[in-house]
Length: 255
Image (tube, rainbow, N blue to C red):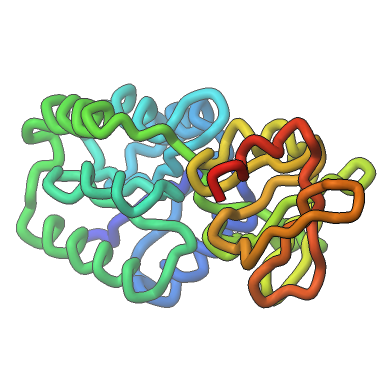
């Protein structure tokens, strides 16, 4: 039996490299026959290579991973790569497709590999009820009214891309042409604007307190007033304070 082949589709080159390296370590027999950086490229690549397996990032330019899976037909096994919140992952659990949650860990990837190997060795036909499976998956996601809130922040350090869980972020603050991402342990810069972050973050967990500042509600240690009457927020595990503008002071009336 020939070694199985696969394609990887993710819009971040470093994340493709990371997954490829882990697959080489955990499944050296697997042949990576191509990589794509967006959904349209992924469709063309899969149609030309006809791989046994496709690792598809869900959120890609052009077409999402789910849209790619719908277009390529049922000839290959699909593994979604996703940064979606854990509660939304329940939509995948009972379906024939598999998923890997970012950042990719050896333990979770090994589970996926074992599942794929078993399917291949058992000659499981990936085309069985594939269209029905995809429709069930989309329905399950819609039924959960999953809003697609941001779960991970991509931060570049030189040629490397790191992922910061939004759960670890204390606040975001505008700084010239960049935005500071502040955690308890580190400070990083991203190009995503405060305005865009405000649209992508869960509003129940992250509050905009200034035109240039978004704070994690769970990181608020206390609130006081300055001599001028402005609200001042002290943070858990951090020495600095943040000022609330009058525009957003109403958020704290019940606190």
